[in-house]
Length: 439
Image (cartoon, rainbow, N blue to C red; front, side, top):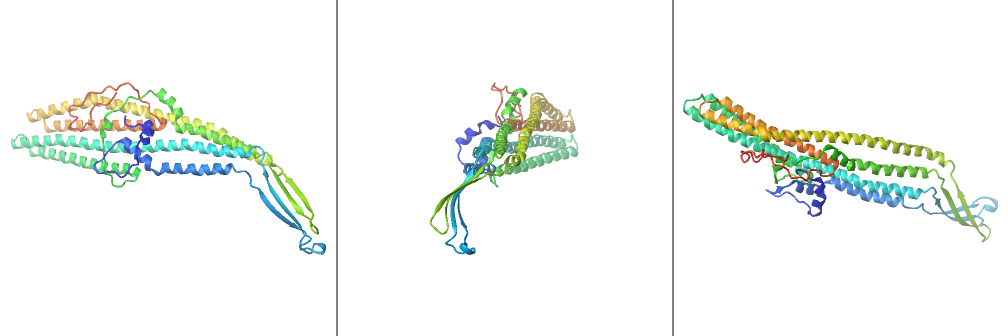
């Protein structure tokens, strides 16, 4: 299986931190996953938010502070209040008595936000793993294109040798040899282009873990197998557990906590104060106490309550829209995978083998003088085109498979053994490109 997102946790648990790529190192897809998970800043940024939200939770759990006050009255006035000796000094201690469950509501909101961070991090992780798999697929595809070009070069050289011998024997004009040499040069150009694409794709992949001069190699045989996929209804059921939908459950709890906090604001808090006052012109001391209650708390809290209720109601619409969007994406990816897999299977079963037999027969006929170079060239062109078509189908299928697994966050392939398609007789020449995939 080309992408195994569900096994990443086990891979990471037993992996060590990844360092720079070593020259000639063979890099598997799981190795790339581990390196990205260990080094990519997106995941570290998500981890840093844990500390931020934990601090906010601690702040939400704090009670209103005590307020110490001192008040001096009847000092530096006129008459009997002309001096400091006649002043009244009051020392007090006060705070706010929160009512309506405000501390619990603040703490619940902070905790819900902290809980939602785990789902957000999981969604980021899946997106990052999917991007890694897509870039790894690009490297594998470039390697296979270079292998196809190598096969084309081999058959073009055979055509050049045959055309040269026929020219020397006087059985064909020099233009045939020149055409065969031009076709060989074009195949060599295609191989060089594929090599450049492979290098660029390798750098693009290594950039995910911060390496600028990658020296690793990969095993491109993942394109040879297209696994059997579960049916659409089964995958659609698993879609309900996708992180993109699970976040709505966390968001609902957050908005419910906000609504509860808004409702608690409608309950009036009580400011209280207690202290002692030293009366002027003597040493008499008296107790001072007081409370104050703000008026109109319910009317001031009403807009916030209505807004929180509207946000909670809108969440259901958002979830419905998200569900439809995810299902539409799943249907499209599932259809593309099955269509591309069918195309690759038919090419492996029928088209590529038939074209290769036709090219071999045309080559024999050309050497015997029973076929023209144009007929042989056309057979070679169609063979290479079919091989490239098979590669494009495999790449399209695997891109769709990556998208499906990103949406669901799990593997969902049938456990029954795969039936191998007939092996291509020239697979060794084509670097294993056209070996049968799994039906």
